[in-house]
Length: 464
Image (cartoon, rainbow, N blue to C red; front, side, top):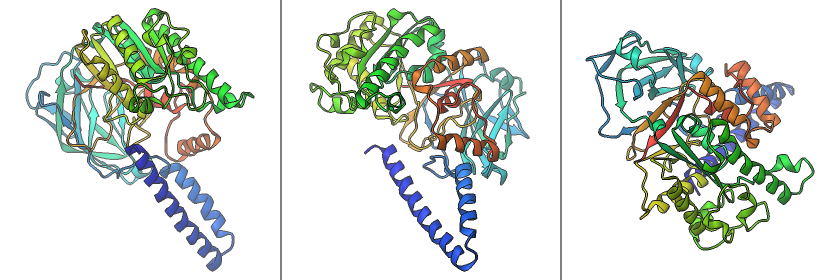
């Protein structure tokens, strides 16, 4: 069982215990006070839960994030003079550095009901309700204001307290290099790196799985379970090849490998054994690979094996010869297919004649906080919760203009998996949170990923 699954199991157990205690209290109120009181309290309690307690947050908002950055990161001395962030000595910044500021953030009483956030320049970055701990604000894109001494950092529904600490991570402009994005599923490349690959001198998009499972939307059209899964897989395979064209990536530089969703761990455990689809009644990947512009080693037999996956990845790396590989970060993103995607690429690189200069990791999912990045579409991305002090990290951030954010939103809108309406329960919850908790829906689409991914930053982690 993964850490994420363990956290969810504990969360659901605690929720059941809380519901049981609440039920006992309601029954007692009905017996001792009035028969109608439990009904009123139950409705009010449910509304309060949906407004303020429905987030999957698997740590206390009072916990300090615990980051250890790469030892070659620069740490220029800074101080807060009122709300103004002041450098103790001049530093040389060209504008594309990743700038991270550590601050103590303490929620006000209103910040227990409305998401607290920090405002600076034209950006705002949001934290957990009730926050009272060390957090890491992303100042990338504010180098000029920082150097000029004009960068004001203010808290809303929270207080910002010193002493602050600034880190400067210098990086080359990866957009000027040949980039290959590894996507475990169709849309992962767009969620994590559309801004990067759409601006790269040359970009390749490699999608490992068809993402055919959880096809209930297509079953509602009258299709059987397997037939619906096959249709969904074919549509997402099309998406993985067609949507990058919106960013100018040629068809000949996109590949869909057609392996089966959530089966990569089983493939890795038995590298030469075919692992069939969970729902599509398939043991051959070629149904989902038929739109590729070129053949790959796995096309010979279509067997969904780990060894075939490695052969495909090796062939693609040798074909593209990328300078920069972009793939999921295995310590931050817990999705099993994402962890295995990283492992497959690293194994494929062993002994390969071509090696990338840089490997960047991304996280489309988290262990501890399902809402991260918090806040609204268009906001900046503060660093996610990390509590592993043994993990050395080097964040690497790309700034996206409003036009680039819009193009990214349109790319996500083309993805079939992000198009179906949310469940009624989720829509009701969002309406309650909009009314009582001040949360704004994304203008780009109903799916939660429109809020999470269409931001002024794309955040990566340099792994090599």
